[in-house]
Image 1 (tube, rainbow, N blue to C red):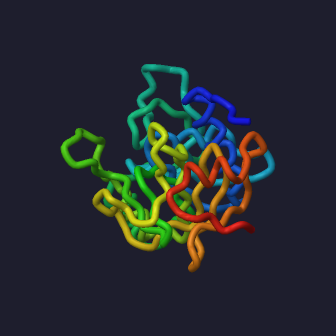
Image 2: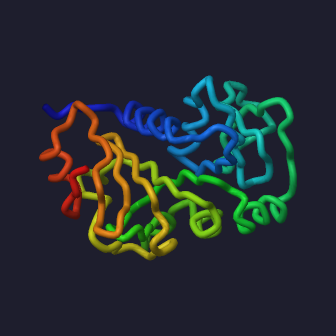
Length: 213
């Protein structure tokens, strides 16, 4: 049976599942949009250091104070944990480009079966831009894509990206409202499917043949 979820429910579900992938003591960068929600679902039993590419480590959950002077990379008011460190953009991107980020969580417009990702440009349309995505995708040790499974019913996991690429062969894991998928040499492998959906339903909304675990 297909379950109809609101956009917020979909995003919260994805963010909560991504949070389960975080490892104790790791340095994690959260991209703008949906990935920023991951900080709201951090398990109590692990300690993770969130980096915000606009210049600090120690990012916490969102803030309800609209006048907060601390914002994440998407400009949203946020909190920080005790001991947070603030620095300039050169240092921030030095951390990213230097390979010190253990994991980055980014959104995507399209992900190809070989791990290519397009997430910064739709020709002819106004979009936020790439930000630090190119640096993060090649600098982080692991890449998780957190995105809705389709765009108005059109698959976002496809054989080859049709939009301009952000980076090639970099995606490790894809987490959507429908399940968790791993990029392997043979293609897209199903790690888990949310119980509200059948394999057949997920396959119908995926642009490549899925490999059953």
